Image (cartoon, rainbow, N blue to C red; front, side):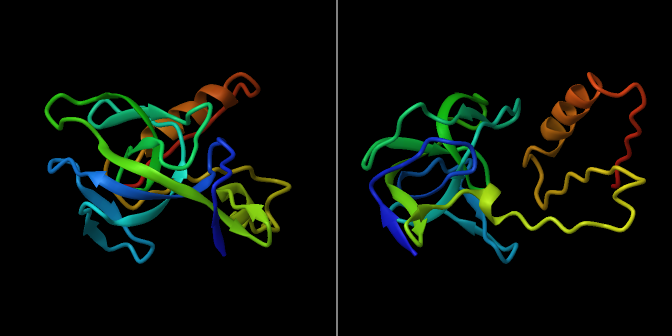
Length: 165
């Protein structure tokens, strides 16, 4: 893998950023292992461009254009990166980063959709299910679930939902 100066601004696009200003009230990042780490200035992290709406955290979106050295923000502890448009006044502004570049493998910019591993179930012809899973509080599970339900309700008259606690 390598880093490229060329960046496609799409949801799920994997990019590298350098932390330049940490919000002490919103300074955590969840690692692949599930461990929570504290961000410090100078850290280089890999994250995914994405949109986020959160009343108790940061709200932001994927920029239309992004270049090396541009400023961008970490929007949640899951590593969603975008332009912060609004934030909870009690938390303060989002952690600011400088774009290093996009993550490239075999000459292609990586996107989360390219890495998805969907397994077909023998029941998939009879039962349609969608699971929204997240390991942290305020990671966007409710927002995603609400969007899925709203979208599906346009096409189906019967939708069953459940929530595990």
